[in-house]
Figure 1: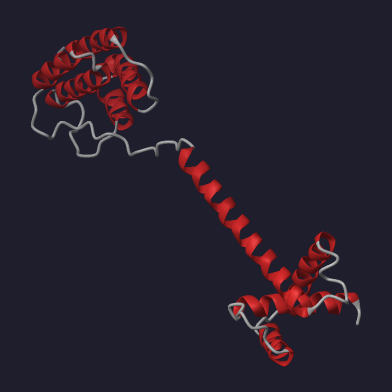
Figure 2: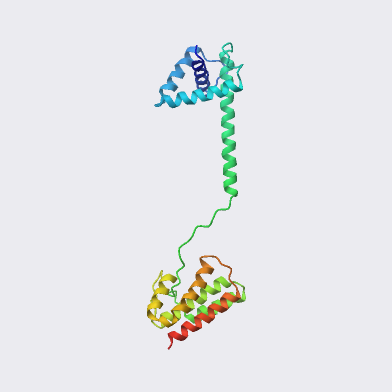
Length: 227
């Protein structure tokens, strides 16, 4: 019998043994032959099956040449193939567990969230936002303080009817609104908006210096708005 047919026969015997649960008693040759034919007929692409069987058989012949020699018994060959199937399955499970463990330990980037709603429709007056900002600054929470000061500034501009107070309005849209409604204060408002966006969206470290600069810019914008 040609080597390839012998190899395929041994591998098919192993697959049969796996599918049949490898009973303690060795199945009859006719039963193995019938079951092998059933397995082969279940594959629509015989070329792929042949390549897979050939590759597995080649590896087994390289590793265990004695067990696959023509003089070996069928029972030993079936057991050898089944043993290697189990080993390969165990290796696959271990590789999967290692992959999952490595994936779970790898830091995952935080998803970028939508822009903050900086509108003032929550009903708080600019003075209330400034008070909240001062409280955050006393506690060292300067990013939150910058958010409160930005909302206070937006509230001042809304009260002056220079920008609309629309739910979901973004800092970029407010920047465009003010550039059209109050050109003299557009640069200062733009810089203040940059400080706010860098703190919140770029996660730039924010401290007393940024808070102080924002207050200066805010005062200049409000001064222009009240003229």
